Amino acid sequence: MDIKKDKNLLLYQFLDKSIQEVIPTFCDENEDTKYLSRDKNGDICWISLDTSLNILINNKFKDTSIYYSNDNRIGIGRFPLFTYKIDLAVPKDTLMTAFHIGDGSFGFSMGNGTISGFIPEIVGIGNDENKPGIYFLGIASNDISSNIPLIIVDGRSTYNTALTNRPIFGITSENYNKYKLIVNQNGDLEIFGDIILENYSLKSLINILKKDIEYLKTKIT
Image (cartoon, rainbow, N blue to C red):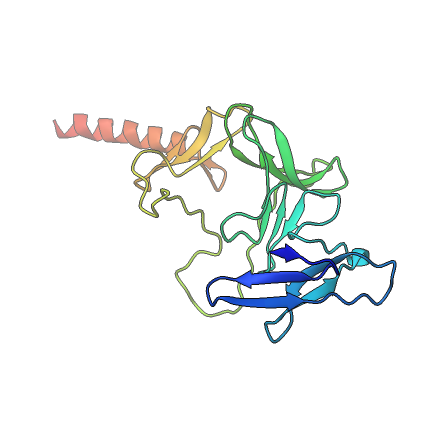
């Protein structure tokens, strides 16, 4: 690329051994910010930089770390990775909220939940005891019968294969490693507590049945 004395640019296209001269045209003598682009016909031309819309060269918004791509993807903190439509850069080893909807005290947040590595953390906070922290709502689009659950928790490996090395789902209260309920990789349900059915304790019923079984055994013998 050469810059001529009249500030035109000569673009050398080595593949087809051609030279194209692009002549800038300025509507306003004070408007000296132009950048090279292509028009609808694919020809190289000079385009005015519209700072009122914060459109900048190199796909970055002015004075920010917000990037955008030609396929409508947005990256905050870095250029959008892979095929993510919105990509927020959140460092590992740092407790940090990446995304929040709420009033600043109560609401819904997502981010890194650990200072050692990265654990995706979703936090919901209700503003009183009558509101849940996180409320999952699935809405069916019709009344047609189906065997597909309305809400699905899908655990899998990074190769999209079945998990064989850890449980799929767990519920804790305050203690990350002290589970109240676990669904393991075989689909078995492990409950570290009791199940109440119509005000009856399942544990109590099982104990009663065990006693009845032992009593019947003695009668048989």
